[in-house]
Amino acid sequence: MKRIIKMLLLIILFTACKKNITEVEKPLPQTYDTIKPMAYYPAYPGSWWKYMVNGAQINTDTVGAKYQMHFYKNNQFTYDSAGNVVDSYSDTVYVPFLNGRPIYGYMRIEHIRPPFGDFYTQWPILSETVGFSFERYWSDKRYGDFSEKVRVANKFFDGQDSVLVLEGRWVYGPEINKKSYQKYAKGIGLIYEVIVDTTSQDTLFEKKLIDFRINH
Image (cartoon, rainbow, N blue to C red; front, top):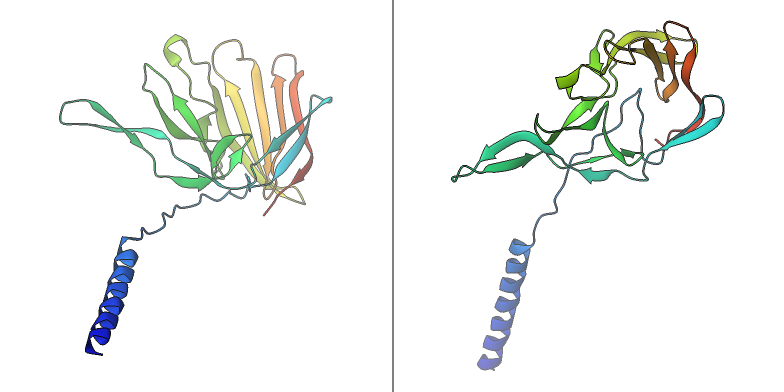
């Protein structure tokens, strides 16, 4: 009888120890922050915008069905003990993907190319601050500044929506006589874009929102 009791006690002790070991060794689930869309660029998963381009062609911008994990190589590199460069990466986060590209609020990801480096950085799409200025894209300026200079020119209420107006211009090269305008409506996104020739006043490009769905 005593032998049976000892056996039972050993079984109970072994089971308890095994359970504790399992609980200790079980890894905690990895969690990441989610970068949510902003008011004037509501790129929520499952959203889309349909545009009429130049009065004829219809283009659709689409956000993927769910937030996706994303990180990128940044410029915060270090060196190992042998003097070799060790790449550094941004924190992993969940972001929406618009037309297959990650969106970080009012930022997108831009590639800074050699010989100025070989890394990625967050780059403005727009801002809610009137007067804020940025370049549309990164460019290699060794042979001239061909970049588009963008400025948040105005914010107003059109009787229905709060609207941001962006103005773009070029200061050098073949685009110097062009000017661009974009309108972003709060809770909708891009509603209108046009590029005009400042000399002839001709419309060179026009994009109008004709339908959309914001999937909050």
